[in-house]
Length: 593
Image 1 (cartoon, rainbow, N blue to C red):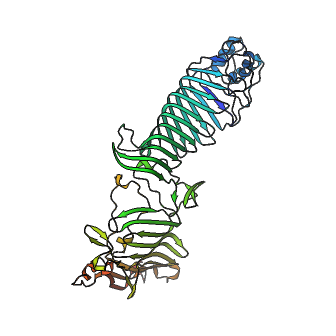
Image 2 (cartoon, rainbow, N blue to C red; image 1 turned 90 degrees about the vertical axis):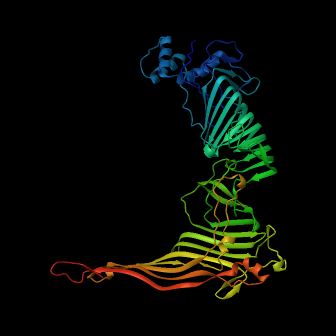
Image 3 (cartoon, rainbow, N blue to C red; image 1 turned 90 degrees about the horizontal axis):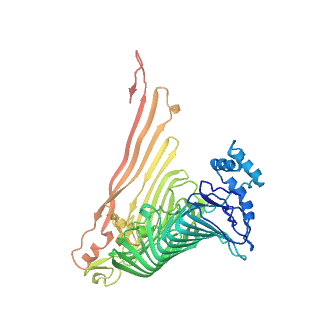
């Protein structure tokens, strides 16, 4: 009984997550109990795998296979194949594709296959020179072998990802949901949060949990400037974005001699930007510059955003920033080795332990409001605590922007090419700094800023009240960061200019008012107060310089050697506008006052 091989592609449809049976229409008769084999031209056959079949211990006969697959074979044929099939059987060739299929169903006494349920995963065999269905024996797994220019496309709606696979040979185990590929393997997986890419000789993939083994090749993640190249003898995928590289190399450069790379005996990619290395060597070109027995890079941010570092004058330091409202603005790493995947900036985060973990909930709207607190410590200088807030509205106040900081510092002296807080002038003891507020000496240094606006009907008020204890407060305590630059010495970013010495500031209050027309007499058309302000300017001044040692040494390292004093007071600065018509004669005219 004839069976036509139709034009199209050989497609395998997995209904749900239940393994589906694999069947093929037979072109020649074979004896009962033997395995079926058929040579298929590339891009020649389209077949769907029916759901609900399980591998049995007894091989079906050719007649059984033919009857089981006939309905699917008819359903998978296009219009021109149906016409040719009907012509060969002596049936009418007229009508639509649906009418032609109905005639063939009746001819072979088979029922049309039931409509496929919504598939969670679809596997499409786009091309293969040869396919071989290996029937299960004695309860074993049923498999399909594809050889020669094999191209497979997998779409997983449940996981929201697609997989493209090309290889010389692919073995699909439908019962265990396993894919094995050999020879010139090219694997690409596109996920909502990034893309994985692999080239090599061997691939073993578990389609249920996306785990697998990649051998003798290289993998890639990300796109553009975020693209990373991984080379390793063995690459093991644990699913959920977890990869393990054995004897691997990581670089953001695809050249055979990358500009910089990391070689390690084992590398763990733990999902997101989280990863770890064992016995790692960082190289610039071929020159090793850093060895790390173990290194862990957290993918999720720590809630207090610690920054570790060293400054020649201030010593080793830890700077922490904790957000009580809002969150830190994302910052791309300057070195792409630390950009394994795209971040979760569009998803909500929650505190779990000391980490800010990304959740599955998407953000609803964005805001630039924030309230954060600081706590820093310096081995040489001292310590600093403070808070900063910026909110669009706070009760009746609008555009609130405030800062408050307290610093505990000691003088740091430059001696014999190094900075030290201990010197002979201070009897080799810490010389703690002080500041003055309204004539009172304080053991702490301080800085305050507050800016806001207030609207009361037609009256608008704005306030700006900075106040600092000494001109060097910003230099000592506000040169800080919220982002950890792990490989700063390899970064090519533009240098950041630290805060400079503050020489002056101005406290100011302004008022504006526009009188409503309903409150004005008929002969006045408008009245407004564009400016009514009062301000106090502060300037810095140096204390008298002592003429003897050791006072002179102590003086030049004391931040209170300069102080702020009221320089200029503006009691009132006003400007307004009034317009109207006093009288008109003989025609209407306007006089403005």
